[in-house]
Length: 444
Image (cartoon, rainbow, N blue to C red; front, top):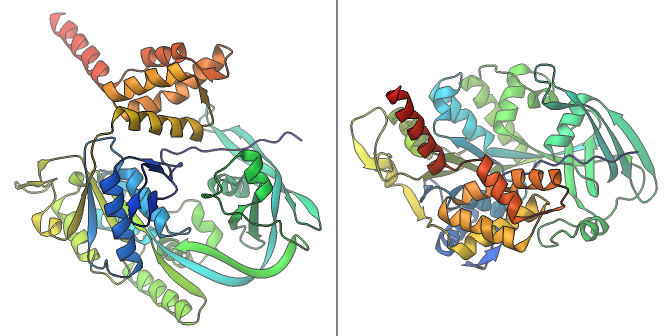
């Protein structure tokens, strides 16, 4: 059987935490580089949150574009714990969503609050020894592949079984990032998957970092068993499920039912009862709002009230603006945020990276994207990151790898990076070209 591993590498998938030793930041750790003061400040925030001393506050990450604001927000969520939800939205999204601005923000906040539920269930448990995702062209976009089915093989110390699953389950395997070597549990009724960790053998084979991976033993006994099954859903998931009165599994795949305040109150009461009975725990997560200057006065008023709520996530705002007009008013304010809200924010600043830090970040991203690059190619890419932007340099890794393969090379050379740079312009070059075309149009 051909083993095919689906891998989705996100912009910040390499981040494991804040890279702290006590409250001091290491120069390079947990996928983060530099930004020592910002990371140490974030570490103090994590400590305050864990001690229950952060109620009614929020954080503002302020700094130029590409200085690691989102990375630090992800690091805070990772430091708070394994199942802590991290929800990232952009300030401009509230205008494009097909719902009221305050409803969009409310849903985002409830997505950022997790509920860890404990139940005795019939489960499938074992190490993934083979995984093949069968994909077909999307019916509306032939250039996009979607899962049609999957074949997965599970193994315990006593038995091994292979399962063929449908497209819904295949999609869920992809969403959870299940890989060969993972030890997983599958709820027999709902199809929900929980990753417990990786086997030591798989970690050694993949040369993964032992500090960032959970090492677990291969389970014993039968693959099918009755066992306590622990999984995490968000308050928003429960809102949707309660609105539909359907199965939990249906809530992962679409649906735009309007959620009423009565439904949310019902869910809150239900969760409180579960907590009182010892069946569940509430896990406040992180709501990260980028481009916060794009929010308007109504949205800011909602956030101000929401911070006081008993069930509120940790709210982290990010801005790369200085003085800006508060949307919906004629008033100018720092970062485009009302002064009464700024007074309640702990502000953490991020600074531009040095050349050495840019090189180290690129090395981490190259490893994360599982590609190889020659030393002089890395130096050239580092120069691009310093002269243009770190984001632009990071974005060139994938096309440069594609060009290298096309040229029959396993390792990206300086020529491959130069060709990628030539084909894909940075912001300054694209603006220059646009200006030339504008002059041509005017001249014609």
